Length: 432
Image 1 (cartoon, rainbow, N blue to C red):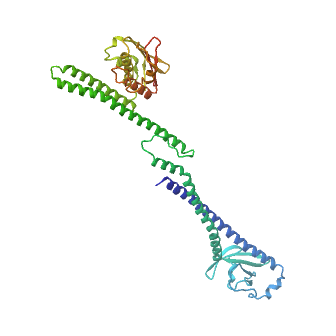
Image 2: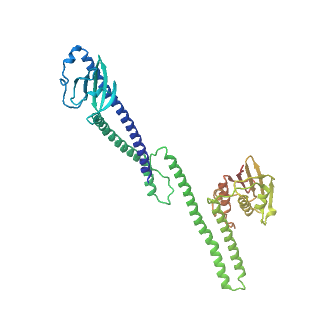
Image 3: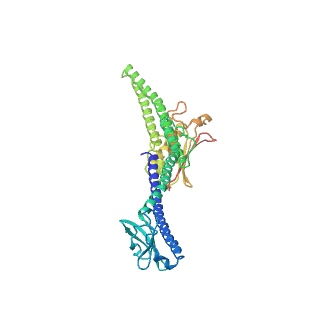
């Protein structure tokens, strides 16, 4: 069921129920007031008749015939006057029985010829005056009033439901525009959704949707660049391996060792590139990394420096603190290892490693003594697959570091030293 129909059903049923309850309450109240009003009419008629008969001498009544004022049975108020012995002196309807007022003074109901009557009796100067009307006439009057009141009520109810439907339809129009905009949208498009003026309740949804589309566009762009760069970078070592193997096959086993060695070198480069690509893809994915346990800074540096053949050129200054990092220590060590590899590849001198804790952040500084980089090189140094000419690296080391830093909420700063070389500062937040 659509949201519009659900809202219309819930609100319409609630609205109708409230209207029906109000109508039932009004009908009961109207019925009570109508009965009170008709009873007051009977009492007022009796008082009026009593006021009239007091103006006649008392010897007037014995001379009257009971049928003097008798009339045929018609609708309206019936009246009967009796003396203290119960003899009827005057009455308006022939069929009224003599025991009409025997029920006592006040209001009571009585059956006359099988029809219920409402009777009011009062005493005036020794005479008993009874006024009455048929209950069926009261019911007919009540039905007429109810029908007269129900017609505009029903029209108002139907009009209210129609207004409610139009209001819901108009109120949900922005959702219809959003549905139309999304249904006609290119699935690969990351442009923000714009449906014109939106209500306050829908505006956060549009902003969240546009933020999600922005992130999705970034992911799609990253994947597209990854595929394109990977295809380009993997083609070169594969071509080299194929060429070396073809040459080695042609020249024979006696002279093929040099080409096999070159093919092995190209294969090692391909393997390293693939490992770096897989690591970059894993870091940039939405994978939830496990929470890190407290780890010492010395342990981080040992993992980063392990298996380095040029460890003799490394100079370290590392404190003995233990910290809790936002990512696994192995991942942080990969970032440090890539920074150290990058420094060792671009200098023949010493690489200084400093790992300290400042405030609530981990500061890792790797400084080399290589040549100055140009301004253009500094702009492109963290781009994927960018490397200086004649470099043996894959061009993914600093890109991986930057991805790890972005994932952990840290910062990577690359600056040229005045004495020559590059200083890489890795700043990571410490978890509490």
